[in-house]
Structure formats: C-alpha cells, structure tokens
Image (cartoon, rainbow, N blue to C red; front, side, top):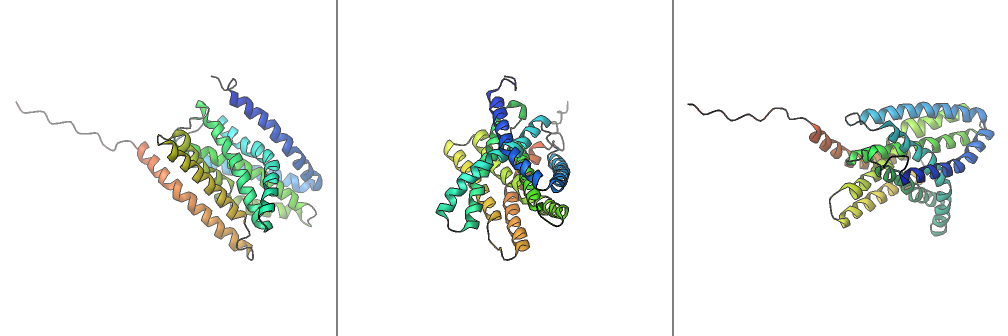
Length: 286
C-alpha cells in the first residue's frame, strides 16, 4: 500500500490540521505581544533546530533513516502534539489540581501525563509504515528523539516569545530561553523523554517476548518517561533554580543513558563485520 493511500496518512493529515488550529492562536498572541521578540525567537529556534537535527542524524549515521519520515516525526511533535497538548494539558491539569493541593506538583504531573502519550502516539504511527524502516529499538529511539525535538522547539519558542512581552530587553530574554531551554537542556528535555518511552514501544511492537512482558515493558517505560518529565518540571530544589536545573537534568540523562548505551553497544556488535575469515581446514597430504 502506498503512503498516500495508507489510512494512517489521512489521520496524520487531519491531526496536523487540528494541531495548526490549536497553535495559530498561541503564535498570533505571541507575535502581537512582542513582534521583535517573537521574530528573534523564531530565528534562533530555527538555528537551534538545524544544529540539533544535524547532531541526532550524526549520532545515527551508522543506519541512515528516511528524511521524509524524520520530518514527519518532527512535525508530529512540533504541530500535532503541541497543538493537541494545549487542550490535553489543560484538561489533565484541572484534574491534577483537584487531587493535588500543591500547584507546582499538579502542573508538573499534568504535563508529564498529558504530553508523553501524545508524543509517543506519533512514534507508533510512524512504525506502521514500512518506509520508516523501524526494525530495531534504536530506530524507535531515533524517531522518538525527533518527535520530542519538534515539541521542545515549538513549546520553547512560545515560552520565549511570551517571556519577552513587556521586558525591558526582549532580545536578551529570548536568548536566555534559547540557552537555557535549548542548548543546556537539550540532553534532558523532550527528545530524551520521548526517546526513552520509545524504547518500551519498540519492545511492545517488535519483540518476540510474551504479551505480558511486552506490555509491562511498554507501560514501565512510558510511566518512567512521565515520571522523569514530572520530576524535571517539579518544584524540587526550587530554592536554587540552577542547582535544580542541573541536578534534575543529570538524573534524567543518567536514566536515559543507562538504557541507551547498552542498546548502542549491542547494535555496534551486531553490525560489526567479522574481523577475519574462518580458516579452511588443511588439505590432507597425499
């Protein structure tokens, strides 16, 4: 079946339109509030996206993935998950605030619970296309990272533009957001959360293990990604924001690397050619 005729393609297109509908009012409000800050934010986040895009592709150079599928993953995070997340996070946030008296924890938990499944659905949708070549766990990690990157860029762009409104130096505020939420947080933000959850998704849809083990792995990794997301957004160590930023970020990164590095080493071993040919038996003397 061609990509155009695939039912998931049409669902993707519809969700893309809905995502745009959700995003346009937010982008318009950000532009009207501070046109200069918004323009600088767009420019800087485009440059950051190009750098992050190159870095992820470079890390995955041993197994090239289709560029169109990569773009589809990025757009799922940037448009669909972000646009739908506007409503999902608000709904989950209302429930969380009704159950959790602490506003900081309620917001952190609602963000993790609502955003991580939305992003992971995009990875699952891509896995349904043979053209994406999602055969190994690292393939799922790759596409998960790009879905997370798209979400991270658009969310941070909106935060930067909103933060610049009414500021004495809107350009400086925008630069601060790019440095803090982009350059410094790149290793423990949305790309990491979604890539981590994608490991469990790969086990669910590609592993030959029993159904119980596959579902436990999937749910365990999804809950772990949501928990790490909530931890990073939480008010833990809020008395010192920089200490909190790096301490919580280090935890997120360490957990991800604990899963990712063994997978990468295993993939390298499986892909390595034999160092020498098996010697042929010596011929018998006549």
